[in-house]
Structure formats: C-alpha cells, structure tokens
Image (tube, each protein chain N blue to C red):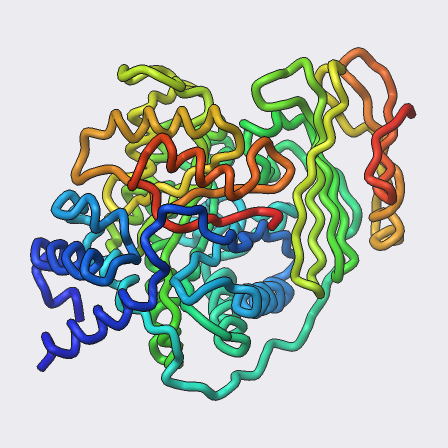
Length: 185
Length: 298
C-alpha cells in the first residue's frame, strides 16, 4: 500500500511516525529527510509488519531429511564463511552426520600472518545451535590442515577425532576435536 | 479509506518496534548454510525459522539471516549459490528453503516479527567465471526471489514476516566493480533491501580521505556496496579496528541520503562480544546505529 504514496511523502511519513512512536527505525527517523529515496518504500514496508499472523493454522513441517556430509577437505574454490579480518584461510575440513556438523578452517590471524589460527564452526541441527570458536597457535605462521579423517564412514566419529596441522615452518600440531585443544603432533 | 488503513498499520507497526537504540540489543542468530541436497536444505531452513522464532528476544522486527554461500551463475539462465559444503543450489531451491523458513517461523512464532534475508557473498565470483553482468543478474534475481518469498508470506497470512536480501561483501574476496553489481542488480529489481554484512578490510581507520582497502578497493567503494540504492549497512564488527574503518566509510559517504547503520554483524570467538561490537560502533557513530545484532555463533 505504501507504494501508492510518493517516495517523498513516504519518507516524511516514515520519519515523522518513527519519531512519534519513540522507536523503531530510530536512526532512519533521526536522519529524517535524509532517508535515501531509493530505500524509503522498502524501509516503510518493514515498519508495517505486524506481530501476529492473520492465519494461525499450523502448516505441515517438511519431513526431516537429514543427509550426512562425508568428511572432506574444503577445496580452494569453496566459499569460506569466516571473514578475512578474522582468518586468512589456507584450507579447511568439514563433516556432518546429519545431526551435528563440524567445520575447521586453518590459516593465520586476519591482520597478523605470523600468528597461526584455527576457526571451528559447530552446528547442532537438532538443538538449533551454532558456535564459532577460534584457537590461536602463537607465532607459528599460517596453519594448514595436512591430514584429517575423510569419507562417509567417519561422519560421527570424526567430529571428536583428531586433525593434523602443520605450521609454516613445518612443525606438526594435532587438533583434538573431542577436547577442542591444539597440541604437539 | 486506504490512507486511513495505511496510517493505522504504520502506527501499529511502529509501536511494535523496540525502543530507540541507546543500548546494545540482544543478538539474534545468523546461520552459515551447509547443505547436501535441496530436500535437506528445506528441512534445515524450516528448523532455523522455528529456532529463531522460539528464541527471539523482545517484540521487535528482527533479521533472520541465512547465508547460503557465494553467489553463482549455474547455467546460462540459472543463478543461485554455492554453499559452504560445496553444494550448489539454484534460486528455486533457495526460494523453496526460504519458504520453509517462513513456515518454521510461523509454526513456532511467539512474539515480534521477522525479516527473512536471502544471504550470499561475493566470494570469488570472478574466479568462478562470472562477469559483471552476471553479478548484476545475481543481485537482481536475489531481490526477485525475496519478493517471491514476500508474496508467499502474504498469501499464507504470515503478517509478522517480511523478506529482504543480504550479502557478505568482502573486499578481499572479489573486485569492487563486480561486487557493486550485486547491489546494482538488487536495486534495479527494486524490491529487497540489500544488507551488506561484510567488511571494510584493509580500509583506513582514521582520516577523511578515500584511502585504499584490500584488493584495490577504496573506502568509498565499501560505502557504495553498503549504502547505495537499496543497500543497507550491517557491518561485521569483530574488532575495534573494524568499527574505526566503518566510521571512516560512513563519514566519506557522499551519495543519496544520510548514511546510517542498520545494526551490526557479530560473532563469537572474535575480539568483541556481540554487545561490545554494537556499543563500539555506536560510540563512534552516536545515534546512527539501529537496534540489531545478527550474530554468527550466538
């Protein structure tokens, strides 16, 4: 409905009402007439969202189709979710048994290539939880995963197993996923 | 009558928002998508929608960010994403999953409202063979699918939901020109706000010049992908330095309107806690950071 209004009018309505209501899109209201015209209609759409649904009927959930991801190395072309400011990634590894997932990314601290770092992403798809944890190895240079369990036979066991890591100087380290610790290999 | 109904809806909607943001809001969980099949993706998204609804704090409109991985052109006329487990999904697959996320949120809804975001990234688009035009269409179709999701939400009576798009646009991951096309395509389609939950990596932490960032970007390029057209700034604030960089980006903005932040993207396992991330950015940009923390790992 808002799209029936002119953009300018939508902006002024949005800003004025946001201020009057004392919150919500507070910043857009503060900047007032400075709300970019391109964004005005879309921002106003957000404002008009209700807090209840007009249809309260439950819909049938999809049949649960947990599909494991065999343990695998993350090849260079595969997207990495970890920002470069956190990790300059060298390589990664992941596995899922369909209920829980572990992904390990190895490399160096974003702004300090002399410090080795691992980032471990865990998802519990049943409990609906996700954790992101970093493990710093000290002045080792960038870390890389050199050996890890692979394949479909280790989709559960590998999540608490060990991964071999090598520093930039060739020193071997071992990541124990069961305890979440990094020690000598 | 239409005008009266509109104003009534608008006031009701505003009243449902959290109060003006002077303190860090409670974070909401954002998800990295690791899929293995379209069917599994739908199940995954349904569960995430339900989880989000059950744990949603407060009565406000919050962002449910599902990061499907890198934007990709899958065939001559098919766009989609490659996720973090190296599985490609077409936009049809992703839309189907987003609809299940909407179902999950609806079934488990307790309070407040949600903006479900189709998230992707600019990760190595060029290396995958995408051209600038391909990236434009990736953004265009991303917005179009968000509109499709909204149509679904409306048709199902999910009045507590809306839909938009998002992208983890990182200077280190691809060039400025091709990344800008994601924003341009989305804006060209015209539906979805395009939340940039990426970084300003390598950009200056102080000063007022349009200094260089990583990979040939400049701070003004980060400003473009985070605020031009339908772009909205939801920056990664993992360390104090990143808040400094984004403050420079904000101050440099010379485009349409006054630059503000839609909130922050936070994470566990980094230098700043989610609340500290919001507070740090807010302290440098008083009154210009909205009440949102999308958190990976929370």
